[in-house]
Amino acid sequence: MYRRTGRLALGIALTVAFLMSGVGGASAHFNFALPEEWYMDVAQANDVELIWGHPYEGIYFDAPAITAAGVVEPDGTKTALTPSQITVEGYDAWKLSFTPAERGDYIVYADFETLVVPEEEVAWEDHVKAIVHYKVTGGWEQSTGQIIEIIPLTRPYGLEEGFVFVGKAIYNGSALGDAPVEIEKYYPIGEVPDPLPEEPMITRETVTDENGVFMFTLDEPGVWVVCVAHTVGTQGGYDKDIRGILMVPVEETFPPEAGGDDLKDRVGSLEGLLWASVAVAVLAMIIAVVAVARARRD
Image (cartoon, rainbow, N blue to C red; front, side):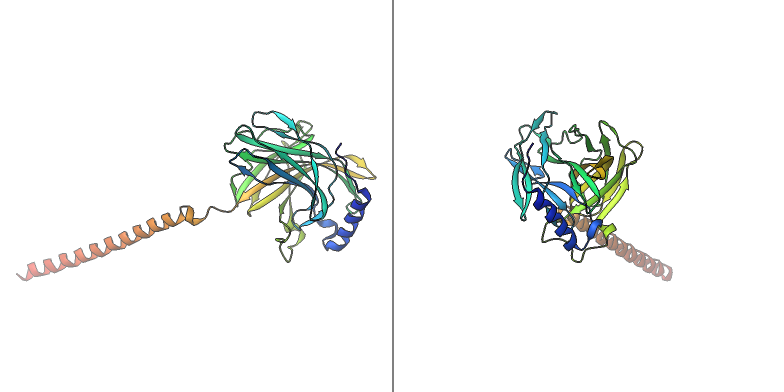
């Protein structure tokens, strides 16, 4: 369901973009989700854009069709959502919208049809989710029931740069061990680093352990795309990878103004007091020495 048009245009766009991007087949492609608001204080509609492309390089393509979409509410209730087709930077994309009712965490998810990419010699079937916080914490660790997904073991919001994120990969309800995990930061178009770093610095990699658990350091603020993959045969003559994708927003380190200056002022005051105490002690010693000398003369 939710079929889009322009299949031929998608193939042409992919080919041209690969030839012009300068990064060839080395760059990672993802379907990724961008909520309008990651943190909500008011119960109003929140739009979530679903885009297909290179998150780091700001290169987009026409998104594949969505086969299912919905939101998991804080109490576990699962509600289907109907995607609407939109255009982002001239390319087909999708939008989901939901309005929170009860306080807690909302998991918005979407399942995409398989997309064969000859340039990468692979077929990808993506299952994406993003977690939106509404007023209080509760529900962020729930499963969406997608065929493959990343269950966060670290709360996936309210994180500062430099924090370590821990997640668990699940496939068909069981832990997915020894699976590759790719991590890539999203840059809005117009904010892409120039020049780009070497490819290993763009898409980082790790692997799950026998329990499906993995971890990595979130070393920069921004939105991160975290993707685990599992090969399940072939399609179109290429290996088919089913991928679970989780979005993780990261905040800047709390600024000094939020308490650091007060601490510095206190430390400065203590240092001043310490030096004043030393000066008084030295003066007292001098006075004592003088007094003893006079007493001896008398």
